[in-house]
Image 1 (cartoon, rainbow, N blue to C red):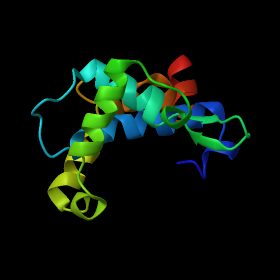
Image 2: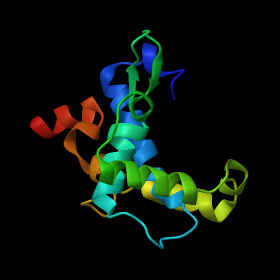
Image 3: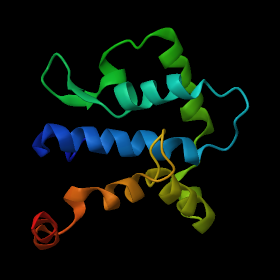
Length: 132
């Protein structure tokens, strides 16, 4: 993440953080003791997957250079303890769950379905034909 951050546009950085915050909860080994979903999301999106410059100007993850609030710190610690190792993530059932997670918005059944049916998703020719 940090390798792409400096050259990425602000909206692209937000998209990276959003995707990682959406997929990470799928890769946990247990829900026992899990933080509330809103706290976990806030911790992942705003702290774990957010970069900032330290006092020397080096780019680091925000939670490494700023002290998160106690509930966020606890959520990040829980996530670090309960997230699968990368080698375990490669299982097809876990990858399918991750793909499912990124195709849904928190408030809708399918993010991609909503985008595909949006009028702006149609090619310009078909939109102009509808106007005549």
